Image 1 (cartoon, rainbow, N blue to C red):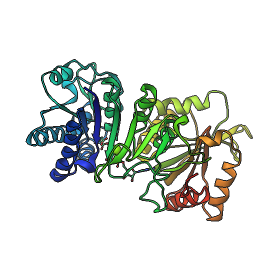
Image 2 (image 1 turned 180 degrees about the horizontal axis):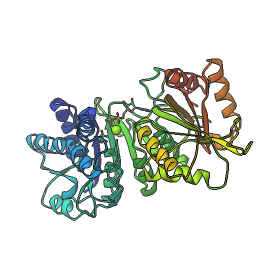
Image 3 (image 1 turned 30 degrees about the vertical axis):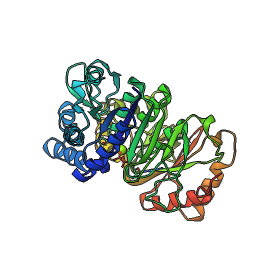
Length: 419
Ligand code: ADP
Ligand code: ASP
Ligand code: MG
């Protein structure tokens, strides 16, 4: 039997009517002759609510219990989806992660797949089950505890199942009808792409475009999964949505193909640290141990002197997600108390956002940075930190300019026009 993976995100299973709508879509694929693995998210808003409860109960929580709580939203939708399919006459069964079992590492709230043995689900398909409804976002650690895969992780569950079961395609049903040149909520000029390369999608996702979880794109690229993003609210067929595929399957040739943003960033500066070998390691080691995801890093020569060593000082600036600021501050202050680093001041700016342009064309075209910086300057948007890689340029700006920066760059690179 050919097999499809169909994933429904939070807004697509937000209430019973939407679960019914999703079940209808699954039934149609079964009628076309497919066995289906359905991956479901929690109902919209549910995971946030669970995270909130954990934080209120225990601010520096035990990650194992965090995962036990926040994974539960998916269990509800998996059961409801299986029931709805049964009501439609489709033989369906729900599976929580441990029942499959979905084996992961023990990095709680950021676990990675180790293995997805097929035997249990295949045995049920052999008995006539047509649809396996699997709770997304969760797995089982070697210590036999429930793990989760990080926010947005159901996308990754879907791709991992597509790889494990040799699915013909992995369809990600969501509340937009595909991947756009930027978040269509930020500008009406955003244009839907028929295709996007794995590499560009990977950058866009890791730079904040939450339409796909970064890890899902990585897995799809590695295991050559045909990955598609499409709307759960519209009638769709084989040609709908956006296909994420290899670069050489794409005709479009724009230098920049998308703009991404990440709203919840923070910038932290250690003012006047010693400029000596090992200082970066002494700062970023403790941050890594504390689980802080450091993103951009800038080291400047400080204007000020360190004790009696004129010039031998530097300022170290880095960015991290805003909800990790307290953790970062604690790690840095502990290192200072332990005497492994010294600094005069710690400045935290929690009003920044990151805006990035992405395109594989950047590899062979100069001038993208200049054009980007000019466009931002023309709108009087100050750039606080710059970061680049082969196919992206990112800037940190004041959060109040984030939308304007996205719109400005979308215009500057003429992304509303097909290239
Ligand atoms: P789901 O709950 O289905 O997983 P998400 O909210 O995680 O859905 O992702 C879909 C959202 O991603 C869209 O509603 C859209 O606002 C946002 N988004 C951000 N960047 C893009 C982009 N480039 N193309 C499409 N959607 C995007
Ligand atoms: N429910 C989880 C989240 O909100 C996983 C997902 O929806 O992909 O992050
Ligand atoms: Mg999502």
